[in-house]
Amino acid sequence: MTFLQHCQCIKAGCFGLTPVQFIEEHCQLRAGNGYLTVTHRRPDKLAFLQTFGEQAQTISISPQDLAREGAPQARQVADRWHLLKNIGDALERMMYRHIPLIRLVASELSPKKSPDPEPSVPAASLRRPERLKQQTHKKRHQRWTEVMAQHNKGCSFREISRITGLSRVTVSRWVRSGTFPEMSTRPPKRGLLDPWREWLKEQRESGNYNASRIWREIVARGFTGSETIVRDTVAKWRKGWNPPVTTAVRLPSVSRVSRWLMPWRITRDEENYASRFISLMCEKEPELKIAQQLALEFYRILKTQNKSQLSSWFTRVHESGSAEFRRVAVGMEADAAAICETISSRWSNGVVEGHVNRLKMLKRQMYGRAGFELLRQRVMSPLA
Image (cartoon, rainbow, N blue to C red; front, side, top):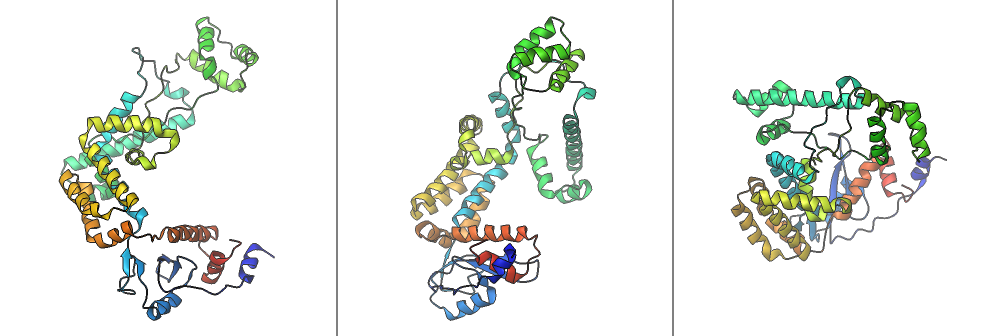
């Protein structure tokens, strides 16, 4: 018997739902073709939940999504995760205006370059990934040049998007940044030959260009790589290339920097670099320091359940001068009652969000082609 047959043979138990708290999330089963609902405990068909909602007039807690008409007497509770996500999105939109600052801070935190620049690698000697990277960079620069040229002619973002084939969001970010949006980079990985760089330098200066001899000698010293790696290095010597003395500039992406502005989202392995990066960046741009403080204040309001500070937080946001945060604050003020319930209440639909992620995972496992009954069995089955 297959796994799916096991799931289909399992009988569904009774749904012991209590009509007091009604936490739900609607997921579209197929585009334009029916919906299903995941509840805090067990899922079932939307028709059942609709009947349940009509009969149960004692529902007291409900999320904001599609519940006002079905349960008007229930208290609306906003989702904590989405509230913090809105703050993070505002920071990310703000950082797109400060791409030159990101590049400046990244260059200052990178090791200083040597005064004598090393000759670059000839294009013919580059490997395929390096050539593709250069081609991608060149193509990206050409598209950025075209976008800026159309913008200087007075074209709108919509017109530029239609001409270039780029999305309006991308066009807007590129124009507002004012500089070429370099791709984020990471420091190069430590190579197998790095521990022997000084010894290889001595061999080169002494005129030893015999790759086979160098490989045999370096293997005797403990090198574990192949002879091909040594041959490629010696071939670059013959073409007059010198290895870079310092590592490349570590240019983090905009989304990564915006995440660093929220300390609770910094991972342990990047904590040291992220703290130095944000400290220097906020020192150069006071607006980012204010934005970081606003994000931390809202996080503390949620953490300490101090809803009395919410109105003063809205006031500070409007006084900050940040258009991105003001836009978020306007939306939050419209749902202030639900946000206050979120701050003071112990209820959260975080469990439901987890079930929704699990439901999407099960759908993708079956390539989105499973019928409702099989999908329902897999969601409810202890085997899934």
